Length: 423
Picture 1 (cartoon, rainbow, N blue to C red):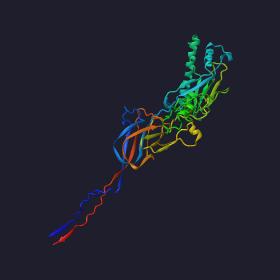
Picture 2 (cartoon, helix red, strand yellow):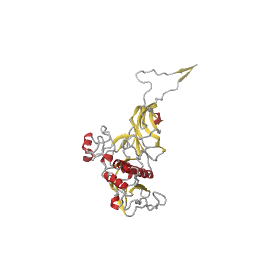
Picture 3 (cartoon, rainbow, N blue to C red):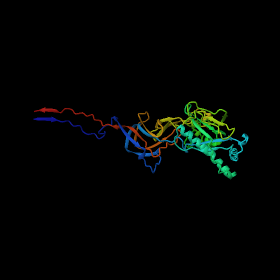
Picture 4 (tube, rainbow, N blue to C red):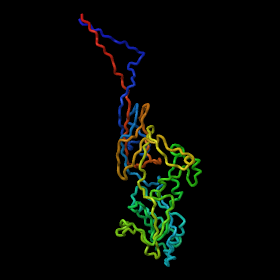
């Protein structure tokens, strides 16, 4: 008969049955997030919302931006960005009396323009995205319209008998030189000045939250010490208004006159066959001469080249901040940048209207020790100046890669061979 001597190990309840060996398995999980899946009633903007993830992600060691897709439907020029207004003056209008022209209508036009020679004409362009040709046409039409409305109202008030004779003011010409990539402004009869130093129009631009010290070093008391600036605003040195995009500096641009009309030698400009002569004196007005100026810098209509994605708890990117004129920047050489300001930086690589895709970046957040649980994310998509990106009804999507640690059970065991006794 065979006998088996089976050894057994008594249970000791003073120790865990399965000892923790601190061994983990790295597990990757990808979660796809769509802006349209947010609660639009609570978060109407696709650039700032909170969303709940499909499950609890436990023991998260790292989070990485894996892929993304964004619509390119942004507007470079908007009222919110305060870059749609432009000011100019007509400083020396054509005087028919000086050239022996007797015309009650022309005299009334001169009187209207002369009465307003020390004041601004302010135009507001349409919000949106422009190419250089469209911008030149928009500026020309808006400038002529602004002067036309003033002259029409002046004649109707001071000499209504001439109202039926007055047609319109159409003496401004704005063209784009496609070779040097600059805008040229001209007038067929009247001298003018582009007012780029108007502190009320262009001095106050980006509004900063003074309660948030991480976004700007300027204090509320320091704002009150800066003259001509509204509460909560600081002077800007880049993208400070429409003139900056058109190639102007903060110095007023004054037109000059010439007996020889300006010309572009690369070909037709305004119409077919003009041979580059884009500004011709008004032949109906004797003695008139053209006035013109050119923007000193190239036109810039592309807007911001990057935007940032903020995700609460995952921000791991340090960011410099725009220079601000304050006691802090004037008396110290320290930075006013922001630590852990964003999770990712995305390049705007195309112009409207299109959609762009990309993947594989170094945008990540590493947790040590691992994050115990991630279930909700608060996401904000903004520009460098802290303005929210305007997506409208267009959808965007990102994919996040979650690197999680899964505890492993100690699977080591001892199973000796049984002793076999033969009898």
